[in-house]
Figure: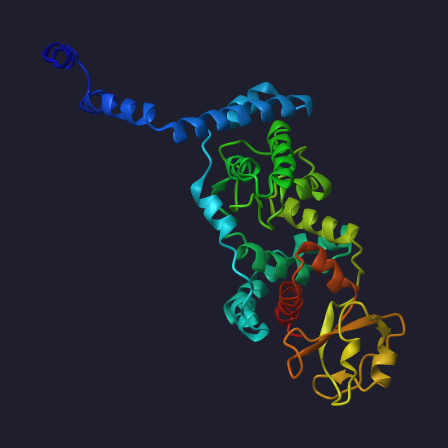
Length: 341
């Protein structure tokens, strides 16, 4: 034992190195006597090796793969956030008071004015009204201020390795690596949400692959820092999902006391003139617009006695972006308030 400690006495090293060497025997004992930890590490190493083989067959370069998985360890916080997704318990009014707050409306108006020229160019090309892009931007990332700080590759790899939704996230991981491999962004700066949503408007890697566009024309798609690319990518996404240029999302309405509640829901669509005949009116009591080309559905998320809305095709397109009635209503209402409707 004296000989053992004598080794440390004769070693010339920094204080930090000395402390590490001193702790090394204890660390080795813990590792060697913890078969669960060792088994988890072996499983992780095998998973990474298998994934790399698959990624190579999908065209991802070896260099990018080596960089991406250097020192990779699953991120515990990502697993916690994935597990802790409580059921939605807010009422519509509570949700809207948080999402469509006055500060966001005011900021949206400022951003609409500040980027009016760019948004007009995007509108001319894709036909999506600027107010909707600004509303989505405000709700998704508070106009770029909360776009996420997680390393996207490691966050998605954590979820792909976890097993709960591994098939989905394994595909997203391939697409995320492809984005880096094509030079759109570097590994070190590719940041996003805990689930891997990225950029000013929170695109998942597969959405990026399918809909993101190079609006700036610089052979690189930058949805993180280039607002032209970000707005155009979002507009292209909505346009290809079926956005109707010049149409609203819907509006709040008032239902008659005798309204047949069996007609509430997206499954029932009628012309506005038919809803008018059935007693549906604008929330202030005025007639519905005389638009023979518009079909709408009646929604009442809060149940009988709650706020009611007639929603059009563009509402359904927003739902394809995020499958939440509350979210789609918030986008539409925020967009309207930004332009004073």
